[in-house]
View (cartoon, rainbow, N blue to C red):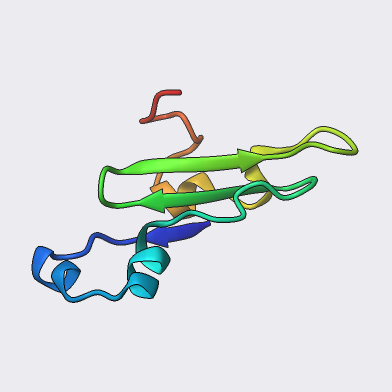
Length: 80
């Protein structure tokens, strides 16, 4: 899981286009037979991409709720 940290307003003012894209743009979120995720500290939002092609996918394939969020299961402190 990709983890994005918040950016201070002063640092934000001096970022180049490439730096802004790296910090805020989420690309390639959908990959065949994979679950990918991006966690942003800005709004504490998790963006997930899942693309089952050959069969079922398990959310825990690339996401460890305890390691990434300190919870036993993904929706323990979140809503869908």
